[in-house]
Length: 183
Image (cartoon, rainbow, N blue to C red; front, top):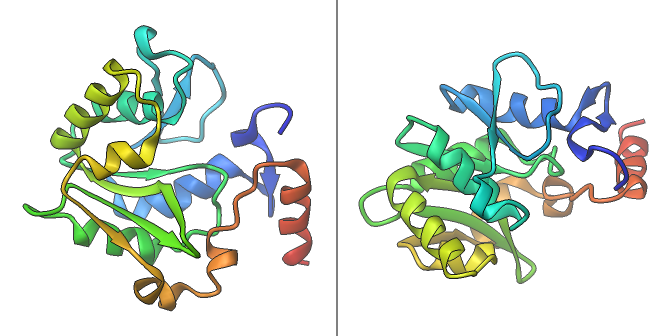
């Protein structure tokens, strides 16, 4: 998508504002993985720039930036191009965390959604840093390296239709299609 995807409008709000609104009831602070960009942020949102040694390394670099910037014990990872993820699902994922689960993400139609995740911060920080230091940039293998739980379709049935809940707005066409769905 050309331009700054987080700043694209949907239903009168930026994609970033949609993400903020989903996460806000569940979080004491909201951080945005900003890479090296300097973009306007909604009130109450703080930028977490990538560490120089991991700049350009993709989503895991952004996740690490957020994990290193937070004081929280748990964190939610939510890509800004997934504005329809139900807040109740994020809450369910946080509730799944515990001594035997440091990471929770979802999978439907044999498709993982690694950028909709809940993490215990301390072990996740170590796992993500280790992955990046070993030039491993893929999110799912990193998540799988921790004690984890994957919520499958049977556990996601409350949030159907899943195609809508996980509608990924990667292109202007996707954004337009989602806008038309609402009209």
